[in-house]
Image 1 (tube, rainbow, N blue to C red):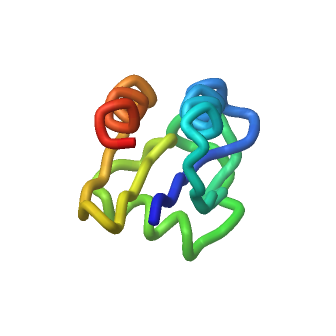
Image 2: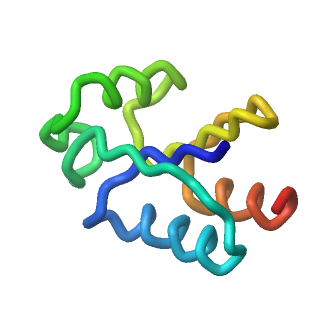
Image 3: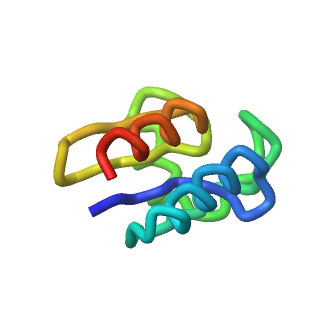
Length: 85
C-alpha cells in the first residue's frame, strides 16, 4: 500500500498526486498539517507523528509498505514511482 503524507495546498504534493493519478495507482492520503514548509499548523497529531517517524518534518512523504520504502522530496518520489509502478 502507498501512503502519501501531504497537504492539499502544497504544489510539491500536487506533483506527486498527479504522478500517482497518471500511473493509476491507488493510495491513501494523510494530511498532518497545513502547507507552509516546516511550521505549518498541525491539523492531525497522529499523522504528524507518523510523518516525523520518517526522520523529517517535511511533506510530501511517501510510504510504500509493500516495498518497505520511505521517501521525501517530490522529485525523488516521482522518480521512485516511475521506476516501480
